[in-house]
Image (cartoon, rainbow, N blue to C red; front, side, top):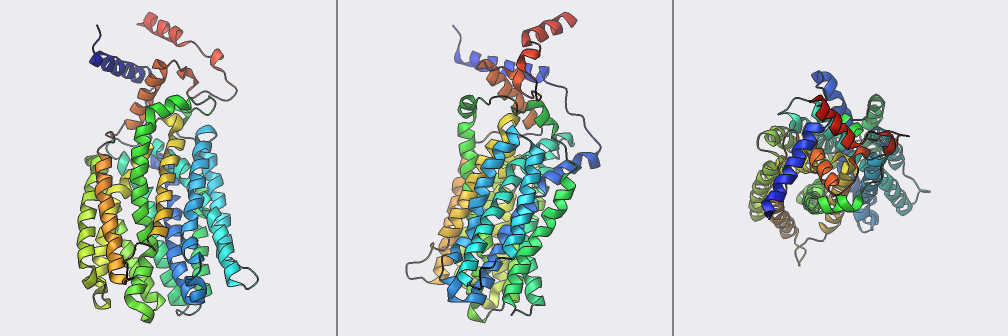
Length: 502
């Protein structure tokens, strides 16, 4: 009688055989040659950080320019959030496209969409009618979001697969530096550019300030588009894709549903707080200064706050190689929750204009720890806890959950308020909610698997062994265009040849 552990041993043996019989390891290239596709694939997320953060300053400027016409309109909450809705559409659509068509070409299309609609958003106009202009801006921002959405499944997934050509022990670090760190630098520039433009416009030419700030967002994806023309498909994708095979979605769901659910929930919770705080940080500062604050003062302190993202992501990146992404994520979440609870308790003192520097430092540490934990590692976990054949769709779904969280957060944060409307206590409530969610996310992360340096290769081997146990013909993995399974040698024949040679 077979005991239950015998089945587990058999599965482990099948995985070991799959790894042994797999294609030879991907050739290690010189560093500069290997790092190039990692940079070109991942760096597009800079646009995500810039475009999503600059809209906070744009929204503040629109409030200065149009007063109650903007502040009391639906546009005040829709304009900052609508790009997230477009991003969800882009993540799901390009997730499928990147698996079933091409990683590279999906990236190029998403970059073109981003360039065109960012430019159109900067030129939003409707017959001199402010409300009509708000609606036009909202529409263009939705399409900008679709372009941003393509960067996640196509760009980040390609970046993760390309790190396999880098030296072991550094792969997680380089993935983070060219994905999440790019988003954070986008946040910083999304805060700094409006400050520079506002200073140049002497804080009075409001239309020039917000239009120029949006328009500058075209420059980076335009440069990146030219660089991406040189890209090739990642080697892992070429070997293990299902682009010319019928994807066994039932088997995929049974194998990955729980893991995908946990990754998606953590991403939802992280973006719920992270994007909401980044968008409303200038509004929080505006509330501290009241009606006496000028744009350069508000945008200046907003830039200082956003700079705290950088040490978190840059210094935290190597921890993901040392501790592993899962434990680094948990560490960052626990520390962030502690600082968040402290900030909530001391907010009444920190929110006075005379100590705005102290507010910026404590608030910045709160944001920085968020990058050490989920900011750096949730995308890494999403990219490396799934097989190559469905990685784009898996990543796209998880990232879409994150952007739904961001969309919900930007709307919900306006309504997380004290019953009497007191601005001090209302802001305290935001930090209490965010810190509590950090603890919950840390608990969820314990349910995820360990991520090592060769996880992508091992995950492909384990998934291949699973498909074979379920009777799915794994010769379809990496099948070339116009090729058929019937034209390939049968696996039993391959094994016979191998035994004969031995």
